[in-house]
Picture 1: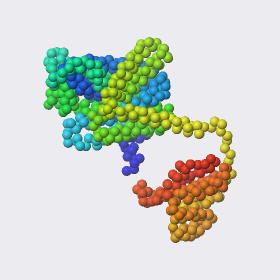
Picture 2: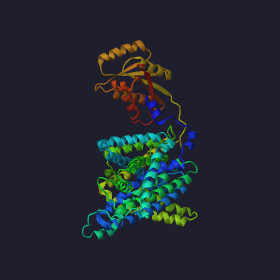
Picture 3: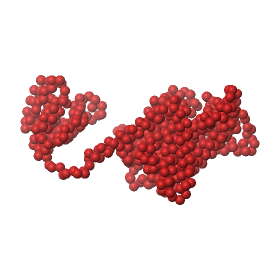
Picture 4: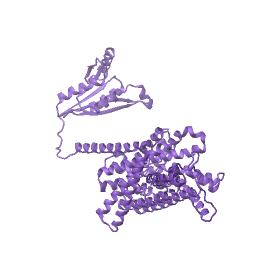
Length: 618
């Protein structure tokens, strides 16, 4: 089967541009596509808090619920800020557009780089966590975790390449299954507590070391627990970045999905944290906090227990799809501003930004392979980009409110300003606490991406300047046109190339580089027999180079032709039927082509390349 046929089988037939509006997401599918990352964080954010506060024993656990409540409050503030962002910027772009328009180009690029890094990490962290859940249930698969992770990346990439509507339908099932099963478990636990059926239990922790009660009350411990649990906020920004994916009215549908998503997330996270504290659950090496809660509530042998575990593993894998939904839209906007390759702004056959999807999948797979699909190794790289983009976005909305002064602008500025201050503090704490554990990689990656984007912008600006028609006079016609045909033999492909060259101009010269004296005599004899009307120039090559003598000969002709002359180099190539046949031939024409394309040209010299392929039948 040909590669094109395989591609069509995987991603489907091309869609007409006029169907773009039909391929957009409804609120139901949009919630499934954009919420999986945010909702999945409720399965591990509580555990991240517990890992910190349990160090201080019972005294440390006393701050758990205040910390969780503070995170929910921050979540509400950030949500209100992004609500304003979506309404003010319905074309999408989120933190990048807001920062660029209100704070300047550099803050916009920093926000963009932070989001790009975060989305790649979302793919790697989510899939590695999902694979960890699978290998925990089936230990025999543990040695193959990297292969499984990469396979999931491929599957999710293919699903997204098929189009927004189809990917939304595919990922709606696991997303809504998780909301139903996991959310049902949380509500069932809270109901049993409210009716007195679930007694309170103190956690089985060792007595704290001397002075630990003081340690539990220190600002550093609280900040560290807050920074760890703030993982619950990851994914909230995705809706604002992908607003154009919704059906009209885009901003209204996007804000509705944002509010519903955050409402569900807040209930799940706060409910999970409360249940963990009530049931005395602490992190274990061999079992997750969610598993302990569900085992206590519904029994470890119940099918519902395995249903919760399966839904948790599935949502962690599907959480990567949030990045696939937002990353391509973000890169397309950055590419339109010429800070990324313009190919990222092109819609593919299925009316999605296919190049962005492929780049994200490739980057995610590289991370998974490089870090051996270990979630613990990837987590320290996470969250810095999230809070950096949060801070810049909300700071941008403060400037936007002060500048526009629309109705209620004072409240909007206050919300965004307070949110920016909170996320800046949390981001700084995350950076300090996790810097030595690998967060430094994220910091340098963001800086590196910013430098690359600026270099790309300079390149496009330089190309535009050189191609500009400003102050350009109409070029005068060429007075002189010569065609040179490099040959390495005399066969049907060469004769077709000479035939084409003679149709272009009457001044045609063939060039042969002599490496073997005996072969030269044979070629001259054949040439005299088949093409007697075209002169053949033999170039000596004492060092057995083929390309250099031809380049020197072309330079000599250029000097003779002057600035009003042009030379066309006709390259004869025979094309084998099978791709691997290319490996069996010398490919001299290909080497010469590259040499001519990338050779520094002097002012006033022109070289036109013309390929004349001769296709072999077998």
